[in-house]
Image (cartoon, rainbow, N blue to C red):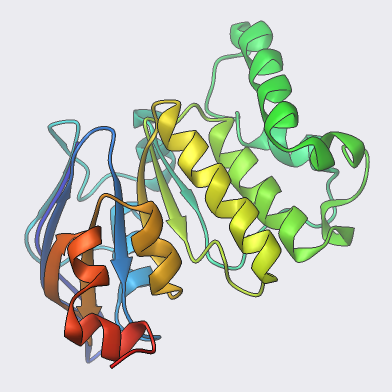
Length: 237
C-alpha cells in the first residue's frame, strides 16, 4: 500500500534522513521505533507532504505522492495524527471532528454524520464533551480527538505519530486498544512510537531507526526478542 524508496531529507545542512526505504502492506500495523531524534517524525512528515525528499520516491496505492500537496494526500486516503495532538483548541470537540471531514463533498452529509456517530461510539468521552472547547480536554481526551478527527476523513491508511506521549499507563493501554480496533476494522496503520514495547506488542512488523537511517527490520515478535532492541529500547539486557 505504501512504498518509501531511498528518501533523503535535509534541514539546511543537516542530513536528517539517509536513504530510508521501507514498505507497508494493506491491513498491517507497521511500527517505526527509535530514540528521540532518530528521524521518525521527519519520515512521517515527508510521507504526508509537509517535507520533501531530495531523492527517491514515495508511492501510495501505486501512485507517486512525493511531490503531492498535503491536502491532496489526505484526499487519496492517507491521514496523519500528528505528534502533540495539534487539536484546534478554540473549537469544540464536534467542530474538530467535522474539520476532519473537510476534504469530503458537501453531498456526503449523511455519511459524515454516520462517521461522527462511529467516532462517538468508539470514544464515548468525546460525545460527553462534544460542546466543550478542545483546548480544555485532558491529554488523553485530546489524543482520542486527534485520532477521531483523522478517522473522519475515512482514511485507507493512518499515520500515528507518538500517540502515547505524555499519557498515563492506563490511557496508553486504552489508546493502543483503539489502534488495534481501528486496524481490525480495515484501516492500515503506520505507527511512530518511542514506547517500543507497546509499539512492538501491537504491530505486525517494525523498523528500527537510528540517526536518520533504518538499521534493523523484521517481525515485531522477533524484534521483541532481539538482544540489540532489548538493550537499547526495552530496558533489558
